Length: 327
Image (cartoon, rainbow, N blue to C red; front, side, top):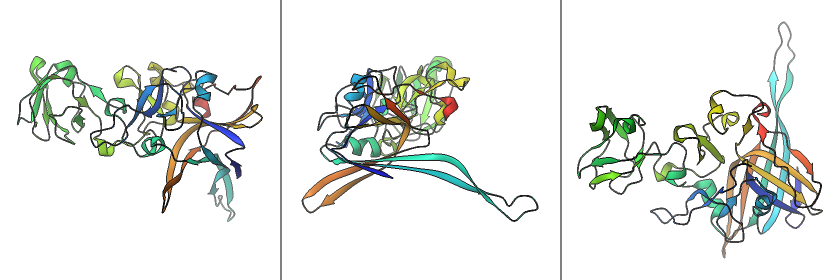
């Protein structure tokens, strides 16, 4: 374990994405219906104190620099390995411990000045940015009915059990109970009746209700059901399958992987950068006292080997993607 004071290092958190620099993970402009902060994919920006950016893409050194963790007080870098006992071997009583993987845990502590870390860990994520969300082009339904009508091509995107929401007239937590495919008059039957009349609206299918949409703990993924657009990941995809485009169906060891976050721990000489790749957020705590909130801690964990990067000049970072073969 190595511990740094906040004044000894600079830490930058970025997405594992160096090709889509216009999007980053952060708080959306408007809170959700319960007035809670909501995390989503927003325009790249700067993480100034009390800002709304958590992690920019790493497509440029400038975007990495803009992802600095502000008001940092401490960094705990824990390096360990996970072992497994094997044996006893055939005809023997002895066993052996075999190393399975290396583990790195980066624990960051800073003075709490905003709600960014809370939302990124706890959620909710914005419904349109969450993995699996599909907005149908047009659906119609009347007050008190338990069904929506639409085109066959739209209905075929749905399946029984999907959540449906995003429109005020659809009750909270409604799901699809059955499907009837009948050309232009195909029907989606809901688990509850509509509370309002819907006409040519765009409800969102296969998206969890607010209370079940966690934060962006696993970074982004590319939704193959929505033209491979970026979405906030649920974390249910094998990390080596978090790739961009149609190649998701035929994996190569050299394929670029976008899973999780990258933590750049830069020493004060501004030359050496300890780069921890493909991290998932595994913990978040807030310290409280009689006077209020003082500090919060974020824990990021990975089993991918880190990179000690020494750039040719200051303010440069290791930005090459991990590959499927490494995961």
